[in-house]
Image (cartoon, rainbow, N blue to C red; front, side):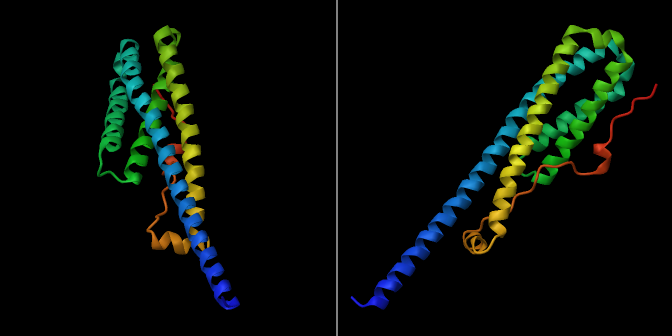
Length: 190
């Protein structure tokens, strides 16, 4: 066998091996991102289940705050609908979840205005569970965003971007707060 043929076979073998490794790396990152989104889903479901109990507890103490409670229920229902909808885009889901997080702050602000509510054991337990869930959602978001960052970076880097383009790997969106209004603290005035 001639030397040039051996070199050609070696180069082709290395190129094929690199393509396989790049493809497998992209698949791994795509699956990690999907897993991370699934982790967020689990925590969101837990939050959806806790909210009605929290609202019912608050209703007994702050019955004239019906508007605030209705906003929380509406935001929860909107988030659940976006979550369960197969046609909702990632951006629509993110907006619904961010709106729900914003309205939940108002319930916790209400507890400051009603000392009896703040002292209620059921409310305190539900608030702790919801706070724990919110912390887990934040951790899941960070995990998801880290995986998305890795995937998006790999999709953009040369020469992996060639493989990503050939096999139609697409960048994912980060899970982030959409607008400045949602970053502000809730103010409850009586």
